Length: 277
Ligand SMILES: NC(=O)c1ccc[n+]([C@@H]2O[C@H](COP(=O)([O-])OP(=O)(O)OC[C@H]3O[C@@H](n4cnc5c(N)ncnc54)[C@H](OP(=O)(O)O)[C@@H]3O)[C@@H](O)[C@H]2O)c1
Image 1: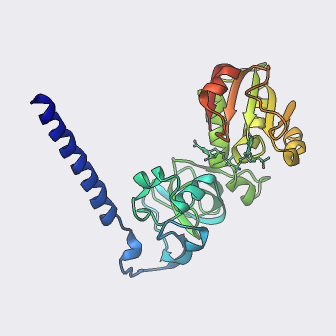
Image 2: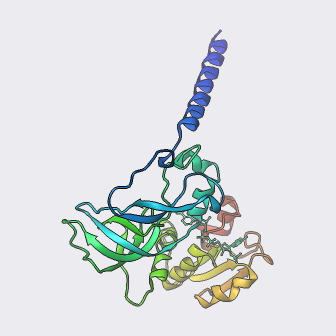
Image 3: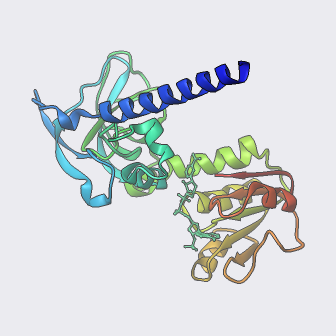
């Protein structure tokens, strides 16, 4: 009797869950479905109305944003593309859609990393002034203008760094720094392995680990071995020739920016720390 009731309850809950997901799927839409009347000045922005190949993206008119009291208005001079955009545009892996919108992306503006020039500031902003060159991370960065809080994820751009170089820093470099310093607790003298050492995150990770005094091994393909050496790696492994998880060498810390090895395999090669980007 109890078993029968439990069965009924379970199938009821399952039915409700399936109905809720279906309803959320049908109701999931975005501003592309609504007619938009843009008031005031126009800017161009990259718009994503559907999940799909990059060809589904369009460049469309949007309203020029107006900074509130705590924000700055930035004229974007360069923006960087990260794997995050690749996942968001395609809506894959499908788990992405659970967060970003089941049928269509809820957020239609794309991009995060940018560098540019401050054009206007809110009345509470004291850190920046119009004309300052800055870089940072802000949702919707693939646009001519963005607004960003002056105290959040925005800093001055050094004069000897180009806009393009600065725009390539935020996500990749912060991921490398957080992985090695904050999570990995890297220390001078440690043996550190970076898997995916020639990529966006990996190239920062090699340089940061080296700057913090580690003995660095970079894993990459043959065509990028020289690049990885040139940015400071002490040892370079060509992953087409050698699998670092089956060798005898152990590391104090492994940062895996590829994700092609299980955490258990990484842990066997490193004590005490290993993690994915
Ligand atoms: N958690 C976060 O906040 C966060 C932030 C940024 C990135 N990520 C993730 O970190 C990963 C890397 O990002 P990224 O921007 O560095 O990507 P990326 O620029 O595409 O770099 C990936 C690198 O992996 C290398 N690679 C490919 N197959 C490999 C293999 N079997 N063994 C070793 N290396 C291999 C490639 O080198 P070759 O060209 O030499 O093959 C490439 O340089 C992505 O999965 C991304 O989603 C996470």
